[in-house]
Length: 305
Ligand SMILES: NC(=O)C1=CN([C@@H]2O[C@H](COP(=O)(O)OP(=O)(O)OC[C@H]3O[C@@H](n4cnc5c(N)ncnc54)[C@H](O)[C@@H]3O)[C@@H](O)[C@H]2O)C=CC1
Ligand SMILES: CC(=O)C(=O)O
Image 1 (cartoon, rainbow, N blue to C red):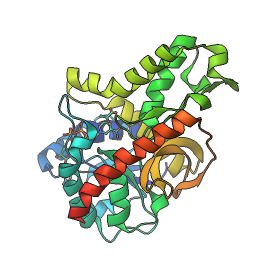
Image 2 (image 1 turned 180 degrees about the vertical axis):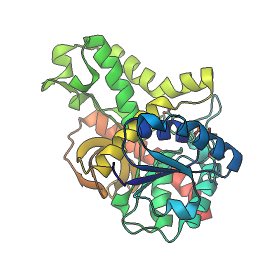
Image 3 (image 1 turned 120 degrees about the vertical axis):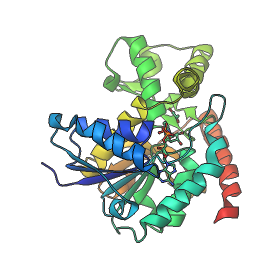
């Protein structure tokens, strides 16, 4: 059994589903859940403990002071979108939550990795880098890994092949300005359009349904949790086991002066490397537009720092 520890701040729908997925995948031996709502957190820990016989994982309720000793701290604390809200609408509330969480965790373990999940995840990742004082590579956001998984599922379904046989990447904001890197989408080493010719209208429709998927689920059930839990667990596995998977995550880019998602190498210290990622002209323009949307919201946070 591994003695690795992950702390999850925010034990609501997303935090508890991440805990459950981590538990089933046996990513770590110890899981700590922290929430401002003491009663809810205790109930989530009690409920999750009923399932630990499947994995022999220790799960307990903790404080921010306990969380700062974990190798990875996942931050899901904060408000979620109501139907019709964009992720960027959450910034005022969730910046304050983030600041209080990180201040409560200080001093942070020097080699800690902070994994942001709360929205708007790109803006909060940049803010967490500033507030925590950790090296930037140790503070990342789940970003468009979830959107890339959603896109991959649609393409794999059309091709009647396994998801893992399709390499498809959504880049930019985990939000409305995201874009699909069609030029880098491949199946068995061939460009996607060699095996699945898609016209401009079909591409636009697939990109739009990927972008709108969260909103559609939220309109029907109030929140999303399973997809983000799968994405976050994949990231934790790559970090804890130093797997060096190349995954689209939100991380800092000097070129764009913000955090946004492009493929990065995920290892024990978070983003341990980057890989060259060629984009076509229109995709690059879309990525620059996405970066601007993120920077515009970051500017509104300056008043709080
Ligand atoms: N990045 C992604 O792909 C996704 C991000 N999200 C985001 O995750 C966040 C959480 O969503 P849900 O779990 O559905 O919401 P939720 O309302 O079920 O849970 C949020 C939890 O945070 C806790 N909390 C609030 N302030 C806190 C503080 N200062 N310290 C500790 N805990 C605090 C609340 O008590 C609550 O239990 C939202 O911002 C949502 O937009 C949700 C799905 C996917
Ligand atoms: C809520 C959210 O960010 C998502 O499911 O993509």
